[in-house]
Image (cartoon, rainbow, N blue to C red):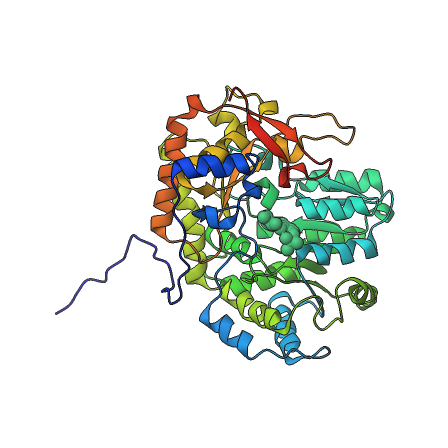
Length: 464
Ligand code: F0G
């Protein structure tokens, strides 16, 4: 009997489930009450009242049996624990960087790096700074300058690498600011604030060459380096036959160092690192690590956290996993586009972003259309997403309010947590909200702090 090989159309979850975590169903009536009590702010909901939680992909993933077994073997010694050496070996193998400094999460690595290199009047170019990166740059008196290509700012424009840096703009910035005022150049892969969009290898190399030419160190914000490697493999000429590991190694070989939140492509619930080649700079960074994080062989992590990251970094580079991961976002994106819903295209790695400005044109930006859609998703289906729009970015330093450039709803996928049926359900909820879009109202802020207001603001629907 000679059977023709079978090629499946369905990309299945590359794992089976051995430990389950029940999720809790609530009625729409209950959710109405819960949302009101939370000041119409999904950040203030209890997680147990959420059915599908897409607030973030950060630290929310499922650990593998391999990670759990490593965690049981952890060494909790204060100095020189074997868990640290496993962690260091993994980071060195993937990034090639000589000095590996563990931190409790990504922003701690940013704090150490920018406190050490940046000062008043400096400018840090990046494709797009993530919020915490920007905050650390600014906290040190420097300016965070976003130089993503123009396509990266246009939700509907299709481009394979919308996270690319605008190389001409980078050259112009160096020309006008002067190399002495640019302590480092950064590149965020993938570009989270721009829709989880990847950066091409050609662009990474171009940034690296510009940095070298001017003698400026080049650092990568590597949170989603494995997802970015997958996009290079599947979209960039010459990389189809390379493994994600080889591509990741090639990416890092272009840079002098990186900051990393292991809560993303470290597949861990907590952790991060700063890795770099320059011994002098590393020495300065280690001193600060002792001050703010802990001894440089644990840097704010438990031994078992370092074990989880040491294994997780390799698991994030597994082809079967990456195929499933990137497909999940594309699958939801296709369903939404088929239903006529505007999203940031093409879908990125870790999330799908709905364009709320296009979806709810009747709601003016200062009445927060993306926020309104986020709340509708919770009310209709118990889904928690996050607004990336005027509530998050609209408050100006002088207290006035300005519409954000985009009104997006981000649906971020925790790693290895949800299955295809969860995604099918999600699509149904979003489409149901879209079909009733004429009933959605704007919101007004009732009370809010002066900084990072979206986390704790209380709002109310207009006209209720
Ligand atoms: N850089 C990028 C690109 C990020 O997406 C994040 C976190 C950080 C740095 C900071 O890392 O949270 O470990 O301190 N992003 C999360 C998110 C919070 O929801 O996108 P952290």
